[in-house]
Image 1 (spheres, helix red, strand yellow):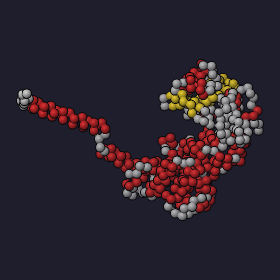
Image 2: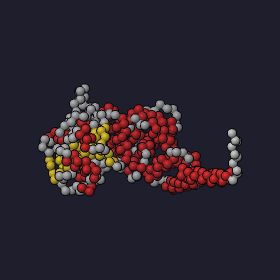
Image 3: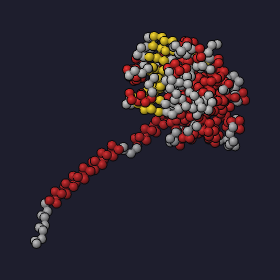
Length: 454
């Protein structure tokens, strides 16, 4: 197999295209490109938006790349803010969205001799910028004014073959930024692409490099996978590559214990069914706590009922769901910087599921649980379980109905709002004024005392 990233010529492949309609491009992104070009700068749409437009998918957002330096971009747009240290970017603000605009980058020069990129503010040419990106299909430029696709790295060919390939040496690319391994899994799962053989092998060989990445970036990619609509396939690829054991050893332990749970036919069936149900859900409406609880509910239950907390790396001797969940979550705080505000909520959600799952059709409703602030999220997690197991639909409907009725009654019996109270005060004030006028009128009929003569 040839290395397309290294053999690519300095001269790009430029292809006129009529397959991308102007109506499918964000109007504000188009405005940014046109304004930059009008002032003499090179400017293109770049990255995932170009890839999705070519695949006839709806881009989630639109990014712009330009020859203009960040300070020059700021001068052209009053609504521009410069952000970032490691990677200096211009954020051009429009109503309800941001058009991210980056300057062409060159290859970063690390002073410590390592491959890991810690600073990425070296400016370069458009060909250098294309070759320093992660995947060939993400390195396509599109000029929406001239309607041209510019390809320096063979991305068009991989797009046709539906192949995900690192640009250049895969071993180098994953060590420069280990989070690229998670991105490869996410894109392959979401787009239905095949990961090229050398790229896949580099992910397997260098998976431990992920521990060098910033933990918040790892957590961000995990949450994106859970919201991608391809969570099941993403986590299957992570399990097969060994990435899951690095970033989420709790989930990897649950899957490795499948044989002990007599799940030879479909190892980890409970977890996969939850993720499959999540893929069919309105994922953007779910909180991070609900997503992480859906991922952890089976490892926690396995540690509780399997009496194997030590296999999960837990020191607690308690068999209580809450205690085991809390220690498991604390380990995740140290590894991927799971926010502490989410830790308590995830623990509450996991404990609540035992009560909800134990309910039967004619059982009394858990009124005390329904008064908790986290109950709506607990219902969301319970609904994911209902879709996954196809059991408990009547109980879920009963809980939803009772909760809506309780919320309606609470609003009906609540105190009047500010406007109502304002009207009451106004009425009281007017009556007082009227009474005051009446008193004044009565007093005016009383003859005034003459002042004493001097």
